[in-house]
Amino acid sequence: MSVEKRCENLGVAWEKAFGYVQAVKVKDTIYISGQLSHDGEGALVAPAALDAHGKPVDFSNMEAQLHQTYLNGIALLARYGATLDDVVEETLYVLDVDAAFTAGAKVRKAMYGCDQPQCASNIIGVSRLAFPSQLVEVTFRAVLPDRG
Image: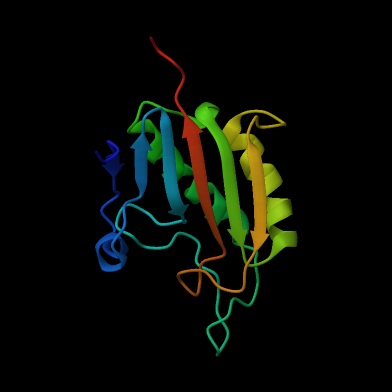
């Protein structure tokens, strides 16, 4: 007997190309795949400027990318009747940890609506993300409250 899953997508091209879903709910837990700063058509919001080798030249768009990334996560959570209040863990994958700490502190507090969001949080520096002009990717795990 397999586990019952409820899956959601955002309709961006790379879901089918890579072969995955954006979010999966199993029982009371929602697992959200790595989100990035794309708009509804799949275009990256606030893409980083790249050098001749395709590497970001600065990280000043980190805050704008994080903001849109959280909006995408919020949209997926809402499909299950959840909010950021239900998030128990998040992981930020970033190209520049220092830029992410500065931008992340501001964006996370604004998105969660408090100075100390009540979720476990990880920040991991990586050498590359899915798209060259992408600076950050965030995964979320949320648990729905017992409504019965």
